[in-house]
Length: 454
Image (cartoon, rainbow, N blue to C red; front, side, top):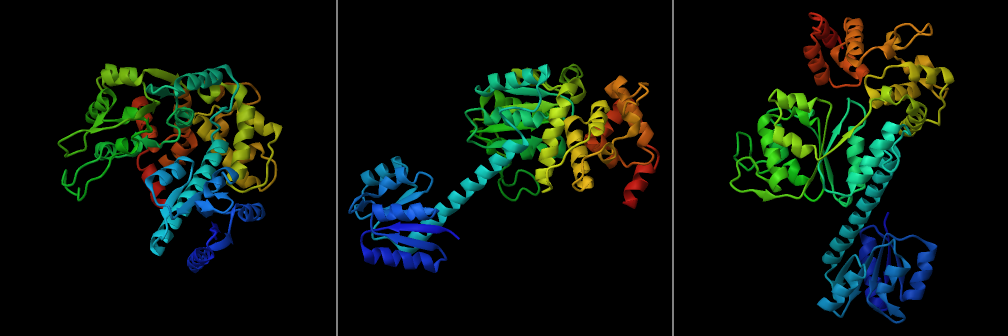
């Protein structure tokens, strides 16, 4: 329940306002001047202070310095633009002239309290995000990760377009969020779009919006995601999935700072910082004519390449401890430990799904551990892809494509496509594309039967 402090020297007004607010369910405390109000502030925390501008022992704006964490709504009989502007400049949340309408006061109080609640929730979410995804110090002290962090520091303060490269699960979205949080746009929104997750026939309207009647089913105008990111950052994950038509429209956004909704006759100005990511070979796609060369060079103003997990094995112990603590917090489990044998298993595994696969394995182990230390069997890693103690040819000696081929061929008879993709730490679409590229056919009828039985 919200607590409100009313500071007003006229007792009739003070008590009437108190009754009005108490009828709405607020907890109200009253004071006739600054000193008495200060005593109340020392005894309890308030969500809002409503104060007269002119008080017997000072001005109501004094609360802006005395209670900097509490919004202050100023009332005054001296209704003038100058006093209103002065109060707002000094930090008052809003201003209302006496005599005021009761409904107007209630609406104003409700709006201020809602804004305060949203600010608190936003602060909590940012705190959680900071714990889940540390912006100021990405986990890892390897040379490759130090270079990534150095690039983030250098490019964040600019508005340069950044292309983030890396295998699936290496943390490309984390890098994009780190760049945004360290930029001058940090207080603005960041819009994240997974281009691979939006059907090809919808991606254009989702990104650029449309006007009413632009196509069948467009019953009203709709803002696109590019417009939604105006003033902030737009992160396009898996940008290699965009169709040529969408690539062309995106190029105009980068070149001219303009976007045109589907069915519109005029352009709209947008101020958007673009970050893009992909695991695809864009250079080869340009050579094959599947990605625009001019767009590619527009995107590659700055390039950050994320190393795979197997390329930075020295980071595994610290990363494992971090993800273990994160999983315990998320699952509301007590702090857990991990055995030396389990750490050895983690070091020996190939991790085709990179950090995402490691995170999933640890979270699964925390669930199964039930408060006990995490052991190798709880990680549930495919045994055929862990280097054996004999030092024979294990996964660590295989290329990524060889490992992918072996894992799929060994497990596709007993796993569905969904399970295969999850264990590899990639999407079903990526699994299908790799099958096509490497010529690995699906077992006839096997996946369909397995899916239908689930």
